[in-house]
Length: 383
Image 1: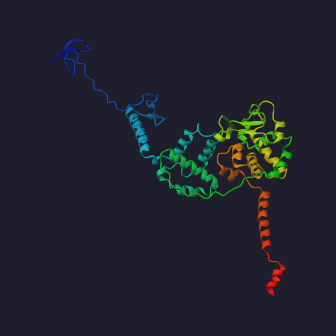
Image 2 (image 1 turned 135 degrees about the vertical axis):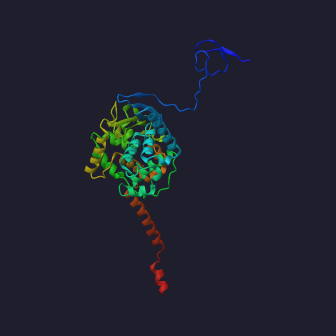
């Protein structure tokens, strides 16, 4: 027996169970269910000229769609969706410029502002003939070869490092690339005698306090962060740094470059205690002024034209001359890698090198003289 029910529209009784239409009002009783996986299209608005305008979020990016009619509107959205899916399935079809941009933006809040600043410079100036090509079309070795004459080997190495990191982050295989050797360039530094000359030359100058802090191993960014509150009982408590971002604006970082960079440094130059301010920042002059004044003072005193970072190198070189234990040098200087210290910072002065050579020359002179036969022995041999 067929069950009867009421029409949900006209409310009349006698509608057979399962009927598609009401026999009284003719309304459709069973609506086709929408598929859960059916694609939805974002709403649009009609412009004054009759065209449609809407927006859709695809892979975290907002895309604007404009079309003459609804059919074209949906077709364009379908095309965008297909393009995103295809790019995910075939990342090699993406442009190198897009991959680099996404990597830099993704790490903008994670990496150091100075690192991001360097990335932006490389992004704008390197591989100009290739960045707008799809990755699958690029011969990366040729790309590197073409750049050799456009920049230094060091810059090229940094630029390829950015490309390599971006490719890896995007899940794209990184090709093996041969890079030109980076020539070793030893930075300037002051040896143990030149430091004494510098201390006399900088005395009373507006940059003296900054220079003495740098000679205590501080990076300029670390020194710019310090206030009088960071000094107590003859110890400098290094915490944080002030770095420059991609817009050349100072940015305060509460964390140092590495875990080892947060450190406590005893004051070793007596003059520093005399010039430290009692309150406020320890360095009150601008970063460019510090850089300019340090180099000018060195030049006027007949010393190597050292930068603020070269004074940090001078600290390490003096420690090496004085025979500091490596662990002490690394702890005071805030280094985590002894190889980096020996390769870049702790330089051997010419005087120490010549003294070592003289020791070896004396060794051979003594040993040779001790084995030299006497005149009597030679005469006896002749007879």
